[in-house]
Length: 443
Image 1 (cartoon, helix red, strand yellow):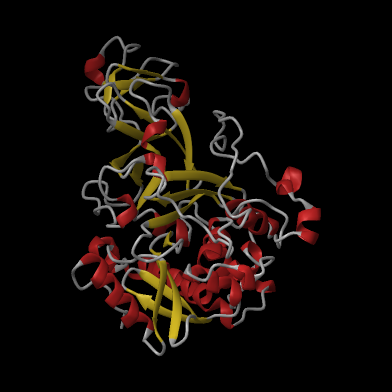
Image 2: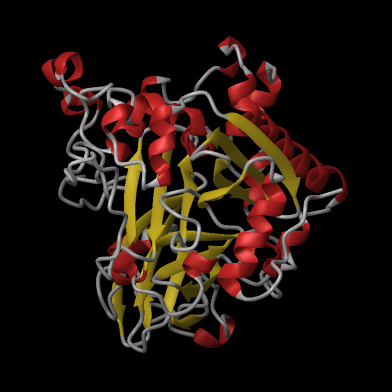
């Protein structure tokens, strides 16, 4: 269990806080590429408690700024995105995507201000359908993007689903690495004897108390949930936490599952989830659990309906069903159906539980158990890494060696009984990729 001081350190993300300063040293996803149109409207964004605007210029380049014009602090959200830059509506000062001041039309003698005053702009990159901002100290020489499979290359942002969640990022992230809740929150009402066991994921229903294996890794942490499977075999369900707040989550067999979640803090009390599944746009998404007669198990899909987007700082990707309507809970289905919650859809079930802990959970009230080993380890690894950065300037190796996370994947495998969990993972990944993965437990 962590104490009250450590809980505060873990959850606060503003500039000058332990985790906030640490997170800023990594590339952070801020929006979908498709949300910013060339010469289109600026978009309000909030990341780590900072109010920013994003815009795409005439040539397609993206700018991510502090929203305040450096002249008199009027918000550039009201600016004109035109002809290669954004022009403040207050006095007409214009800035390109790097923050360089291009024009000061209200000044009679511009020679007194030869270069103008730059806007506060962050470094920007795009990859895999996402816009990333670097908010750290190395603006002149930022690190490379992480080599996560799900975000590398051109991508298609139809593979990505965003969701606003009204709680601190950490309790949301912890739901992604707490594997034993799957057998209750999501599938607790399902009769395992009726399932088609040809899908190994069915073992998450039939055996609800897995053995949790965990390890510190060069990129963060990794677990497997180990269960008995077919005669003489074991089922392992893998996921990895990758600095600063990525999770490669299990959602099917390891060979097909190229997924990642980013749990990006909007501020201390709200989170934007970037849910990436490279099968989504192609229609090759997860088929889901089925009964022996071939019928699908209802209520596990992602049927999120969103409220209309507003221009508020927190007005994007908000679900229609939320705490104000109890997430659409159906008590009759909960009592008499195959749902443990009466809430439709895995994302909404997670949302209900995580938001029910309050905006920021008080972890001093917890009573942790063996099923929480991955959560316990990940909290400690995150705090230790952030403290090392504050005290010595040292950052995790994966920041400047992004290939360290290239072979971190989530998913399910079935191996002979008694197989070492990490060896089983590495052998399967070598089979998938055709080379020995760059994966090894940290010393």
